[in-house]
Length: 330
Image 1 (cartoon, rainbow, N blue to C red):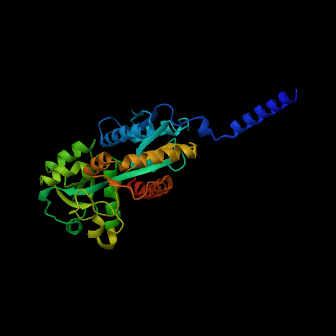
Image 2: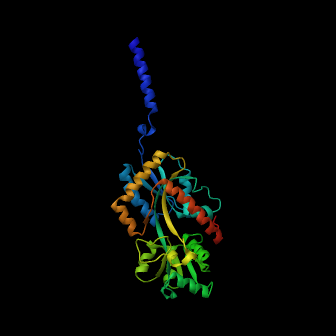
Image 3: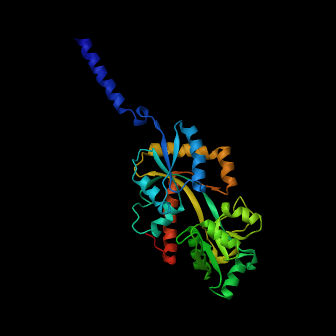
């Protein structure tokens, strides 16, 4: 009877020890596929980058990372889907400046807040915008452009991919800082805007360097300045707008950033594991070389905390610009 009691006590003690073990020791993560949401249609640059990362992440995690396109409303549909998803680490999003910053002020009645609805996972990098003009405009620098515009205010225009797009707000920010009156001409997409610039129907546009690169190299457009704090690694000979614009344009920075987020409440250990897997994926030669060829600049800090701070700063920055633009979308 004494041995039976000791055995029973031993079993109880063993069960208590098992119950006290960390959850991850009993429940390996991930043990099933991860949904990697892209809030834009297939075929675009965001989708292409996400698929490259998904392939490497699948190797890193030993589970399939599957890209799911949930497009619409400037990225808001996909972002709202992820914000409401189960916070278990199996649903994450590859977001950009739109759904993670600009849209907060641009769209009325947004159902999520990029500052509080997500757990930041990693800041991947950013794609510089560049100011390009038609060759016949007769300007070779940002200062010459400003001088030409101020000589006859309101006579120069710039094309954008649509009201509220980053290419639109880049011009709003430029006007506000430089004191110019460039006239906004909205188009339905980057393609139509560029086509009219190439045809000489508009004077200039702000677009991402990946899109502009072939036209710059073939002299179909003239690049006046990169719209970021430092020069682009892909085209280092093009000076920044900030370095040419004097004190008025000091700090001018308009780029498209890319970051990975998870639903708010995702366990910290799972966020850490995902962050580490993304960091290793970004360090592979394949990813580094592919992204560099596309003009993507690597993030200076891959920690979740850095992305969290960056999103908050970008929301505040673009709120002021959106207010200046007077644009509100439903």
